[in-house]
Image (cartoon, rainbow, N blue to C red; front, side, top):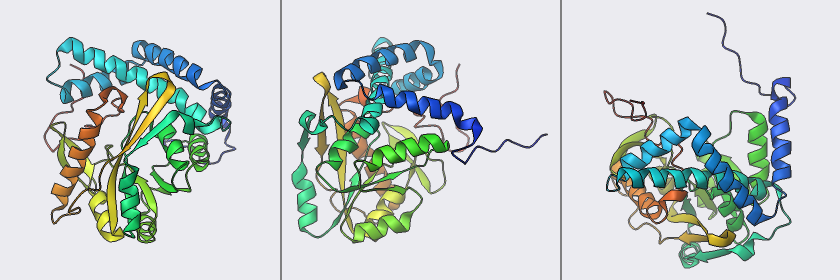
Length: 307
């Protein structure tokens, strides 16, 4: 067998020319008026429902697993709305990263800020329990206008895309932190800073336990409770929702009481329960196109295998 081709790591690598062209087009799209961006995004979502069959399958499978109380037709309709919302998010992100003329602070309502203020008054760092709603980036931009936050993220494998995301986010957050840099996170929390941290994706089974998410075993990293303990931080849920008319709502919940506890697995299950609570408020805006249940306990078949 031949050697596996290495991914390009230099921004000047000729193989990345298509990525650079894509980033340039993305910048142009981002200059559109905000409501037009969202309208175009919905069109993109409708198109993706028909053309991006693999992502449609993932979204439909997730909805079927997590909302068994819905009829088959209702599940399909919800999955369809999820994919449309994802299309909105893709173009919304273009504006969030590239259009700094627009004042998004006029489009947002923030609820629960008193929970942040209470933790800060007690001298605690704040670990925002982030969630992968589709409005993640526009929500972060709006948060960055009212709070000094530091965002934890997973670097993208494509260096051009990673540069786009990192540079885009640095316009509105104080810094970005690689999710593997636990020491830096702990240090910042102990300094009383605010960190946005989202543990609600399947990062593999290393440093993870299988705990329920919508009643389905989900590989979930256990780092949340360890970071909260070592950083002596308050863990405050942070959800963000897209409203009609290009408006948004950010909601902070009360800090989790008696967290972390004595059992890491129970702590992790509690994190999933908390996230589920906020997702149920607006399920079509959650990132269901992600394979949240990709890994399953040993011996269990893949939940995404097409029949």
